[in-house]
Length: 219
Figure 1: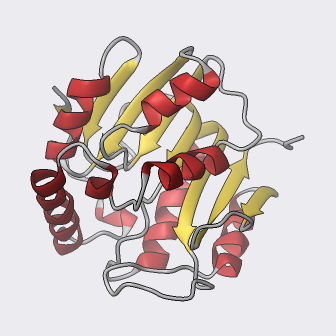
Figure 2: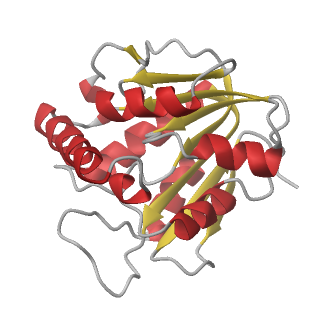
């Protein structure tokens, strides 16, 4: 069973209402769909696998210490094991305790742990090689841009390798009211204030883009 962590700091830009609404949305979907990609808001398993592939594009993950921020049902674990082997240390972190319990039951074990909470300065996960955010910043909050900035900055502080995040794109041809679509230029410009080594991928057939922030030059 997943461990429960203290509530996240307000510095992330999330209000109590934001957290409550997010947890209620995903807990409700879990009750309705069970262990299914629809629970975490994806249209198909194929699109989810494509997101994972773009997030990890060009990365070597052997022996990596990985934090999956907004891990949902832990679907990243079997994908990593299939495409990158099982030599990695994984921590999944999510606001929804129900999702964490379900993920831990299916994917928890040696070198695989799941925690309830959000990223904060006092979160004890040690130094990390890779932090991944897949769909973590899609939900509309009172200030999405502020949350994006705070979360990327805090993640990059904790990471020795790369932070990779995907975002719904403002260039999409339609939007849902519950979601927030980011302008790629805004995210890229902010990422460049954290590191000179940034890649932006807007070349795959989904209504989104992915940004990779590297600690060191990436070949």
